[in-house]
Length: 285
Image (cartoon, rainbow, N blue to C red; front, side, top):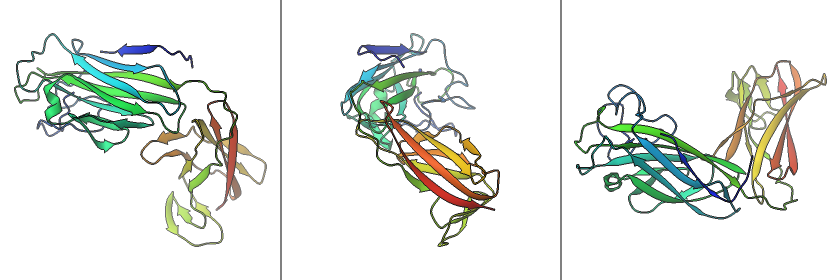
């Protein structure tokens, strides 16, 4: 990933976020930052070419730093004569937002949107600080509304995205030893569900089983990989893990193909490629 210190402004095209019931949600709604407000009875089923969302963010940030993030929506075809003018939903793959008035953090630390008072404008700025990861993706949905109190195609929406990376450091410290949160030692899994506990070994009967790992570093974690090895010497790398900022865990799924003893190995790598690992053993029927 190319890393520079300049600010980037990604202009991608704009959601006072309403429920699918057709009732206006002046206080916002979560889960729309990547998908927008399409669907029946919403602000039009598709993004509008006249609505432009500007997501302003730096391309890099120093570890432990903070930065303003601004979401702005504009649309020459949607007047600002009404009391309500627009809304937004903003999420990030890691780190935490700090919000001013007119912005709500009642979704999660990694997702924010407008309050009822905050939909009387078309630009919002929050403060963000990174945590856990080396690179982050931002997603924003926003819309321009005409203030008539109706959710219709007269209101226009669109989406925007941006990426931020930690600035390079001369870090040679290893990440902490990763921790397996799932599977849980001594549990019995059938079809991925826990059906028993307290055994002297972890038993897996069928799959897939969710694997969750906590990994941390003094600067940031770039990725976590998980490998499955059996007693025959066969080794398989599981699908790439995804990071959940709400649980602070990296997750993937494990669907063991052969019976017998299996060893899961989790390797956590930091921004400079320093690695640390942990293992977990389970018996597969």
